Image 1 (cartoon, chains in turn purple, red, brown, orange):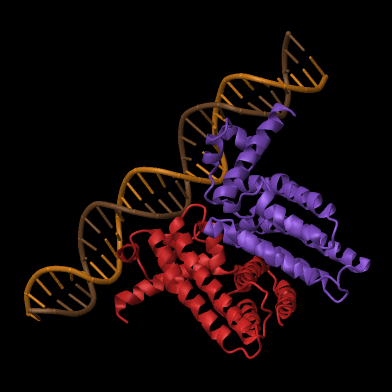
Image 2: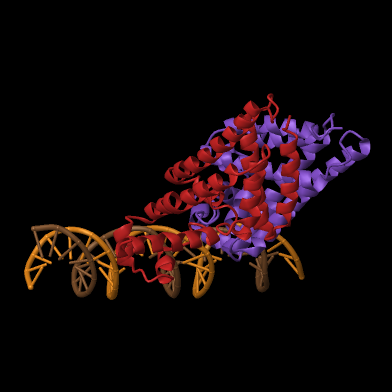
Length: 197
Length: 197
DNA sequence: TAAATAACATACTAGTTAGTATGTTTTGAG
DNA sequence: CTCAAAACATACTAACTAGTATGTTATTTA
């Protein structure tokens, strides 16, 4: 890793931390560079605008982290739909990248940026779509295996699962408490079991 | 209605519109007064700070509207848990107070304000809690009626329902499309039916 | 090694923001 | 009608923000 690309990464990581904690708008460039050894000149050498940096944070920090979370969690499940449960549980309780009091980074950014920045929305949409189709495929596979009811609609279930996850993260954020996650996970388990054949 | 209280209400309503569309941070006081006949002097006569106004918007606009939505929708259902479905459908598709492309006001504000304003969170929590207990009570009643399985946990179901609603609104906002609402509602119906005894 | 360019550093600017100081007008009680 | 308080109007300020202008230092490449 060259010194320059290290500077770039430092900016992105610190920016992610601040944006995740406080939101994009309330995170100023001055604040990002004040809490690193990076100067304004260096910042604007690497990024033309604040928004260009914001997009880079999503593409280079959030997206790979999310992708990694999906892959590692959905693959090694033994029972049908257990992967979806384990993934959600991991996202809510066991992951060090995510803090319960800060919500879901992708969801936070969606909420905040969607009204006035289509580029942000587009990149966040990519992440979401990957997630959606991954879950959909897990269910399709189980239907073929015969372990899940043939009548159910994989896409519907995927929407249902991701929505629930996003929403409960909002709960965790607003109440600043993980109790709701346990309630949610229990009900998620029951719901997923109701899909079994 | 006196002229003064009319001014106050004008501010709150316009502020709500802008905050709902664009978020709290990006809505400036200058913008609020520019799009009304209200001057800065009048604004600061009615509200000491921007945050005091923001809290008032939640308490006096969002909360009553939300309360009204809950009451009118949950009461006149004929089948068990139909009220929950109808309420959600109304919130997603049929309500004029809510626009699919702007998300849920309470959820939006939670996401945006929770990290740095506990007062906002507290008021939003009140709204959420009322919603939660209302749903919980609907389910408890049905369990007593014998129309819903005795084994299920009303609080868990309430969390599950609200989370799903919040999450799918996020989807609608990010994709700028209502298609996902139809998918979600179909799956919600199936989920609710699985709770019937 | 020398020049070119990449990578950074510093000081500044123009615009926006919440909030204030200091007025004037409107309203309602006596 | 009067006058005090309520309700509003206007001009301003201090702080912050993204972004720029203009440098200097570090790295390559020839």
